[in-house]
Structure formats: structure tokens, C-alpha cells
Length: 400
Ligand code: 1GP
Picture 1 (spheres, helix red, strand yellow):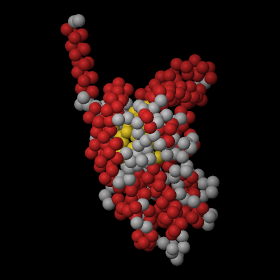
Picture 2 (cartoon, helix red, strand yellow):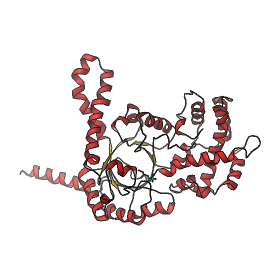
Picture 3 (cartoon, protein in one colour):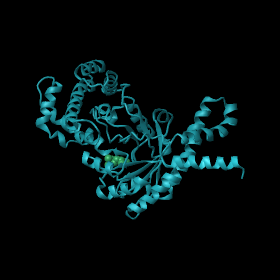
Picture 4 (cartoon, protein in one colour):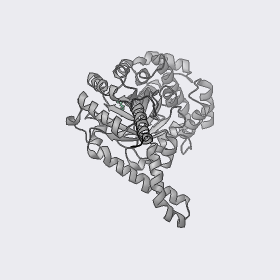
């Protein structure tokens, strides 16, 4: 070996060692992300009416679900997110859920690779996804835009390159699924026998970090808080990761739980179900509010009514906000629950065709002083509420 080749190989070794040691942090998933909200596009799982205000307290939104998801419900969810400030990740559960719109509106396409499921969940789904991306989405797009004589010659060569480009920008999430009762476990073929010990989890996380180069290792207890069993897994995995971020998701509802998983070594927490439960709480409260006031209630009057009607600290709104870094989560929950009730009350005449969307939006804009609930959001909401209106897809919101 010549001196120059030897120097070159030493330099390459050093560069890769430095990258492995995390000195050069090239992982595109920001380490500063500490809180991620998971949104399920299944219409039965609705968003709170003031969702842009809640989402102002999270770092990123991940869109994906296991059942009842279609390309339309997914695109509807992305349409709603145009009014929310955090970046969106799309985590499709089927290749057909990836569309031109989801690709252009998401910061990342997230590809799950389940470390303790079937081989189908690790690589089969990925292969199916790559084929669909190449053959359906990208090839169809090229065929639409190129003249026939050219697309026939070009598409077979260009489609693989473009799909490789999309995958290069994708974020790979190495899941360790630890709740065998969850829908995610069912989808991935994870049974009670596949739940990993801390040592086994550590070994698989090492493979994901050093070999698969997954951007995220995701300890997933979906639907239930994992407690000490979860923090033991996180403690075993966290010191081994040089490249990947470590995320924990499952059953989070209190700041103590969030602190426990962060103290164990998680970079970010993922919160899902409790966010959707806020929409259910809003509907329940709205039923109780009906008939409680003579004349039009103001925000102040609704807040005072709420204090008597419910223990705000026990609501899903307060629980969700307790997992975020917001100051005084219970106070913020009280304001946002009252705001959602006022919005719904103001939209009712639009629903009954007794008021125009423009008038309702004006009234709301005058009554609500919250920078995350913009006039254009309130207008799009009111427009969507009108029958055949062209505004937001309110099927995902508790307006009826
Ligand atoms: C689901 O980990 C996320 O993939 C969040 O879990 O819905 O239980 O909050 P929860």
C-alpha cells in the first residue's frame, strides 16, 4: 500500500469513527424534538376543535394509524395540518396512503421497521412500499407529465432513481413493540413471546443504530404506559445509540411519566390517544353546556361554567398538555376547552343554515384572542361546517 492510500484509508476510518461516536450529528431528525404528537387519520379518532392551539406545544406531528385509514382520510389530516405550526411526519401503514399531497406536505416519510415482529414487518412491507412508490406513484406521475413517446422510454430508468431519492430522504423508525395487545403488535405479528428483555432490546437497538442506520429507535407501548419495564428497556438502549434518536410512546398522560422516560434516556416522547380523547371530552361537555345559558355565552362565562361542571385537571385536555412543556397546563386546558365550546356554539347556526360562515368566522375572530387560532383557520373551519362547504374536512373534528 502506498503512503497516500494508507493515509486515505486512515482518514476514512477516522471520519466513520467520528460519525459513529456522534461527534458529527448528521441525523436529519432534530435532537431538539422532545415531544411528538401522533395523529390517527381514522375519522372516528377526531381532533380537538382548537387543534392548532394544542399542537403549538408539540415539536412534530406524526400522521399514521393501523386501522380505518385510507388515502382520503390521510390527505384530509394533512389538509387540517396546514393550520398547525409543527412539521409533519407521514408514517403510512399501506403504500397506497402515500400520495403526491402527503409527500409534498410532510417533512419526512417515515418507514417503520419492526425489530421484534415478523420478517414481513421488517423487510416485506418495505419492499412492497418501494415497489408501489416506483411503479404506481412515481411512474404514474411521470406518465402524466411526459408525452407518451418519451415516458415509455424514460420512465423505466427514471422511476427507480426518483424513488431512491424519496427513500434517501425518508426516516427509518426501528420499532421495539412491547405491548402485544396493541393494534401495532397485531399488524406486525408481535406476540407476548416477542416482547424483549432489556438486554435483547439493547442488542437489536445496536443493530438498528450501527448497521441499519435507522434514524429513530422507537420503544412502543402504544395504548398503555410501560412503567418500570419500559424505563429499564430505555436505560439499556440509550447509551448504545450514536446515530439514532430514542423515542418512547405509549399511554403517557402525566408530566411524571414523561419525566421518568426522559430521565431513563429517551430523546423524545410520542403522545397519541389522549390527544384524540380531547375531542370526545369536547362533545361530552358541549351536551352538558346546552341549555346552561340564556343568550350568547362569552368565553369568560363558559370558563366559569366549566369550573363547576368538571375537574379540568382530570380532563384529556389537561393530561395531554401536561405531557408538553407548556406552563400551567391545567389553566391552558381550561382556556382551550372553553374556546372549543364557544367555537362549537358559534358554528351551530352555520350547521343549521341560519348563519353564514363568514359571519360566524367574524364573530369568532372578535371573541378569540389566541395567535395559534388565526382568522384564516376560523374561516376555513366555518366554511367546512356549512353543508357542501369547501373549507376544512370537519368530519375529523367534533362539530356535530
Ligand atoms: C402510538 O406510541 C404512540 O404509536 C402513542 O401511544 O396512543 O398510547 O399515546 P398512545
